[in-house]
Figure (cartoon, helix red, strand yellow):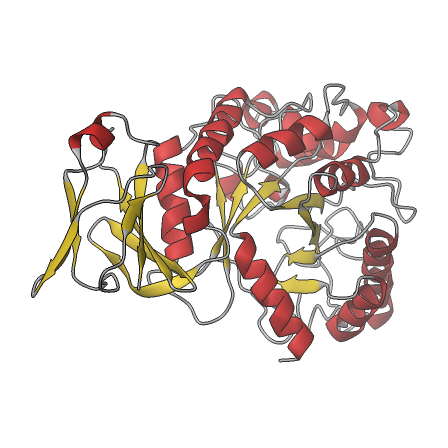
Length: 435
């Protein structure tokens, strides 16, 4: 690994918490993004999905009407500054936005297809902030965020991926790409062209987050070496994440909807939804603030980043339950952020309900609250870590040092009644000790 890449990955590991957004015309139906278009992926068209039921479960009718959602997409309440402010107040440090998902609809002003938010067929094209991706990146960058371009390597709307000359029933091209190299070459040129647009017209970009891992050699070769080199000519220091493919263009790995059981040696990021699905869903079931904070602690204690997804509503607003959780996460991080940002894993990583992180000579023991627990425990004990002799132990958010003692069984730290009655935060409490 080159020195510059190693340095950039250490920078990335310091960020810890990112904001992910899946958004497009599909939000109008409250359905899963893109996947309902794939005939064999029946899981994406549940029997209770209104748009599926209303079309009598006719896949061709469903696909026709899905492709036409661009004609009614008009998110007039779109306010990227409000999004960025909500994410900043939550303590997030980087943003990854879906410039194009697998359905091929472009949330940016591409010149290579009319299937885009700025085309005349989309009513939002007259809005002064119609170039949504640029507006999002500018708003977040103005608040100090690093920016990540999500881009789907697959494009089911493009005739050189799903040819109109044959049925398209899987997520892959519906023709033999090796037998028709000229057709596939047209798609490769299209992908490279769109990536170059995003790398040249949307300000500084830190991460190119490439989805659709099935698009890989030999059958779906996008000439990734050339693509990455071109992108980095325009954006020096760019991290390239060719998800699930492996090799030199997957600069960090991205477990989806899960957290590894053990710390990983390679840089990594868990991408996880706040609700049940990536895109907006009416009456979605959002994870509680407590579970989200515990999730963040689990990820960070194992050396990863958490990329937390919220699907904006079709009108452009963030759902109220998501905003509430973002606000409450920020309240916790304002007290305890030093135990999260810029830290690295510390063995034994977790002991019971205590997770550990470190930064320099400081270690942090993060005690996770039990289900209904609103006050820190009377004492916290663990065996795998001991404070330096004569050093002070603090509860973050409290100025007075705490009493502690060591014996052959480990260390015990007492939390006095006054602190327990008026704790500095909810959900998890952080002890800082020097080691």
